[in-house]
Image (cartoon, rainbow, N blue to C red; front, side, top):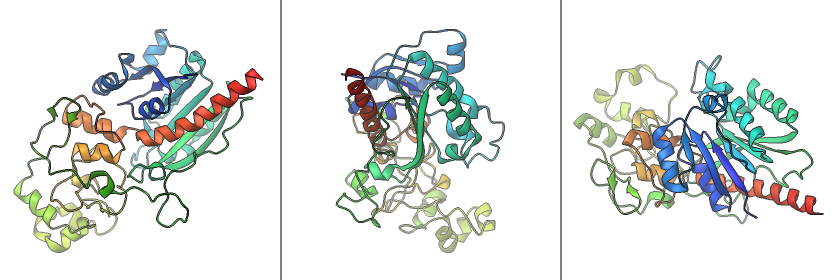
Length: 355
């Protein structure tokens, strides 16, 4: 049996990709980012809508029936990077999410978000709403590196299933990879070198349409000062190395700030997974986004690989729009691991009903 899945706040469709690879059928998706919706359509079909989810519900527009609802209500309201979290309207977008869970008749739902969600008041509200809708839930933290993603992206995952169904045997899902400090027969975490080590040097400075996919392996045109700054950072180094090696071209704000921010203007390591890829990975001043040895930030193609997107996944939009889609996505391999847990719940529920 093929199970039907709806993706809310779908973005480019990273989690949908994982579910489709696990055998699910994508039947509907919605997001208010027009470029992301076009990317979704290019990969999964013309059943995604660019719209405000609250307005969609308020206007009584159709919501298809589905077995599963997945999605990540915008995470900025829970993120520790957001210093004004109290009163952020984005914190409440779990409410229309749960409205669609109810309207679709879904038997399982999945919410993926930043770790801060689990310690928020909203988590308790989500739990109460789910229980009122006759769902049981489990919530825990996951590290994408444990599922073959060459990136130590730590996230919170909530899974809800209709009361009476058999809970998953294991949640979070069983890992497919292990940290170097752990002892088991599993393969080690995938590294930056595993993901991008064989790519040639980037060419050009623009997205180039080729047969398939759009070629995202393009560079930038750094200023002379930027290039000198890149050269001043050794393998594994960061802004503090820039200050030591080239104080005359170190931004004044970094000279004044003598602590914290060890990833800023940092180089990735070949032999480790990447740090979390965010939406401005093409700006080294935003994090550890310098190539391990080349004097440049990572490219869009490299970032997509570090998120575990396959090279044939088609991205649509401008350079900034595509970067946003990559940085906001659920890594497809993490999505597939979550899908395995959901599949187990649904299959056991079907077997119990048949009996």
